[in-house]
Length: 408
Image (cartoon, rainbow, N blue to C red; front, top):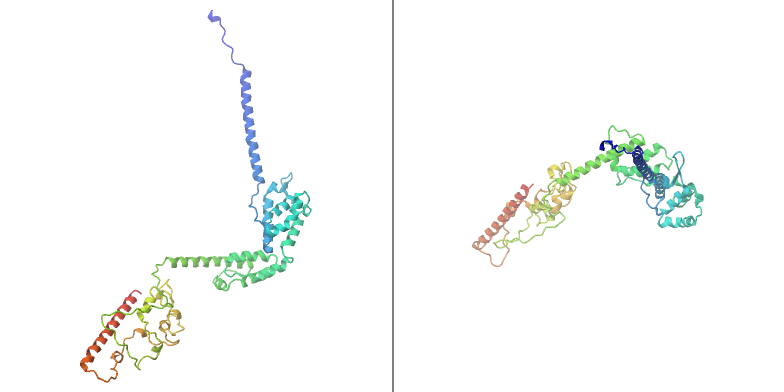
């Protein structure tokens, strides 16, 4: 009996088809939603400005500031696409003058805001300003913030422009900003550009052998390259000078050394007398200054110019002539004769302050006349002691001089 039971019927085909159709419909709806969102995002990105907003305009500068503001605002306006412009069926953008004028007025502050306020009040009431024409706004703006005669103003400012301490690139940028409104020919502009370069740079420009500077563009290009080359060279020299080891900074020649009293276990020697055989230039020499003092002052410095960045042998002072002593090899600022106090133009001896006394000078002074003449036994010990002290001082001075010279 069970063999006669029929099998269950298969699922209806219409039910499967309905489920498949619903899935396809949902997938198409999702695809359309993603495409719509992508289009909207692209449209917003296309409408967004591709440039930064211009800086606010205060109106307290010169004509150049006004021209810069108009130029920067025009770039910002065109890059704003649909935010400030109207697009036609062909995708071309046209300026919306009303939006441009109101947006430009909103960037004005200080003195410029005083001029813009009446127009902004009219705009807030829904009334047209500047006939809703950008060209009319530009004319009124230039009349208020730019000079009446732009050509004469540009000529005057170009004549007063000099390179001074600017780089050639900076000088070129300011020169080109003015030259277009002067009406000068390219040949005249070339001569004016060259004449207003600094004298030091014109001397360097002569070294650009093989580079043409006949036209304005060639002169500008060559000048910028030469200036960049020498500025890099100067920077490298400064870095090398900073990398060199430097010793402790000594006293300079305009500092007066203290003269502490000399301590000795022996009694102080009598002052040396003055003899007629003394060098006539010695009357101007400071007796308290010695070569050892001079070497201490010049410790770590170049004996040719006083610089701490090199030694005398590396300074290239062989051909320099001192204006004080007329010798070559050093400058007046580090002249030893000048430091000693010798008159200008007197060469004298090279180390007058450390000269070894002659036999006549080394003799003790003759005893002063007195009512009682001392015996030879009384004067001999004193004379021998004075000579011994003088010899010790000379030896100490020579030792200090030798040690100082060894450091150089």
